[in-house]
Image (cartoon, rainbow, N blue to C red; front, side, top):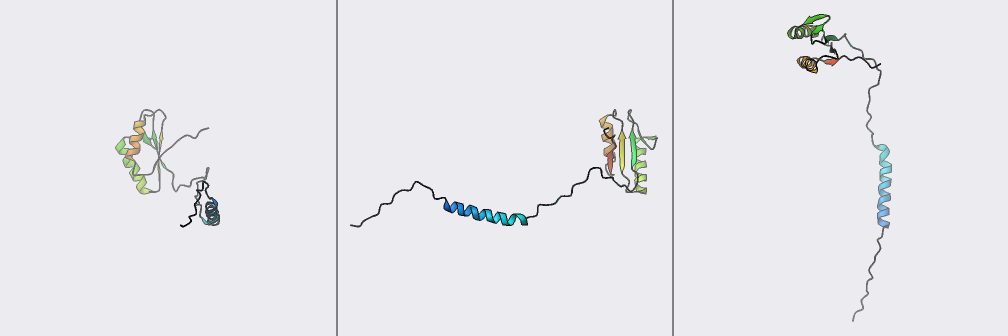
Length: 128
């Protein structure tokens, strides 16, 4: 008859191998962390003055919906033609819409839509 050793059941977990693996990973991360590039992003500065090549074309929209350039009231087609000729003379000029605060939103959006092939912006009064 052979003698068998009876194995006793263990009810404990051996955590030493897990600690070893954790420490090795910690060392790897500590060595490689300074080598990574954090990704530098250049943010714009507040208060920086913008230098424009030429003064923008200012289209003024009055409270009653009339549009004018340089004090001359124009219809939509005349206005588009005038903007086109001025931009052809100097392509760097931007277009700025100065609309009265009581103008219907629809009229300003329609004007911006018809000028979408150009650089168009809105002229606002800075908060005091």
